[in-house]
Amino acid sequence: MNLIADRKGNISEENSLQDCLLEKLYGNAAGRLLLKPLVSPLFSRAGGAFLDSGLSRFLIRHFICSHAIDMWDYQPREYASFNDFFTRRLAEGARKVDFTPEVLVSPCDGRLSVHEINDSCVFSVKHTPYTLESLLKDRKLAAEYAGGYVWLFRLCVDDYHRYIYADGGDILKFMKIPGVLHTVNPVANEQFSVYKENTREYCILKSDSFGVMIQMEVGAMMVGRIVNHPRGSIVRRGWEKGRFAFGGSTVILVTRKGAVCPDADILRNSGQGIETKVRLGERVGKA
Image (cartoon, helix red, strand yellow):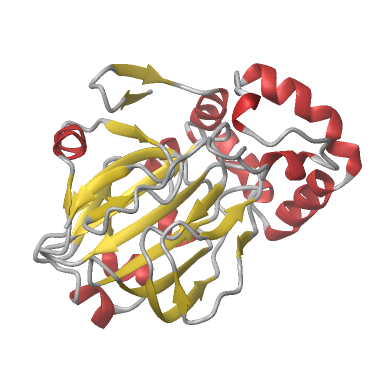
């Protein structure tokens, strides 16, 4: 069960069908044994191929109804497959990107928590400790962000699964880290060191407003594909960076000490173990 706050301060409990299933699977030995083949690359590729095929279209209507998705937010059209529907595009005007230079915007729809990187560069995600070094697989790079913030944007299956660049600037480096496909759902963290297991990609961005920052995408079970668009060395805030195929996924920002401060409600909620529901393009912090 997750506590979620909206930007008006209203707090609610959230427990999706995905959460319930994962609690059962990760909560006992038999379930974890079943998960072993389910998270294998072979199963992920087979599942992805099915969801890319026209045979999966019958899943769309039930998915919309069971997750109460407001389709007015999306471009009206026929979908060739479930993944075609899952990676659907927003209708024009459904999201607005804040282009105020000193404002940091959310790169996606999701549930946000922020964590200050302490002197030993250790932070916690749902009671599981992670080091920035293990996340990035780069000790020297991680050390440059001591005292800054890790921004965790957790996407659920009913969220919009495309994401944008949180700011414009010069791309200094792209990095891909292969991994075993375990879910990024917080329920799993008691049994697996999740981020160490998951496929992830990140870029180092010399941003226009917030110094050098990192933007990372983390794939999850049934998501073997993080589809990032090829770009040149210069990007702009609001440009679409990529999309996730089916499943829950996570986008992560890492900012340096003193570069940007999270908004007060997000800091307060994170300190209380509450995630804040945010939408693509809206303000989440300020330089």
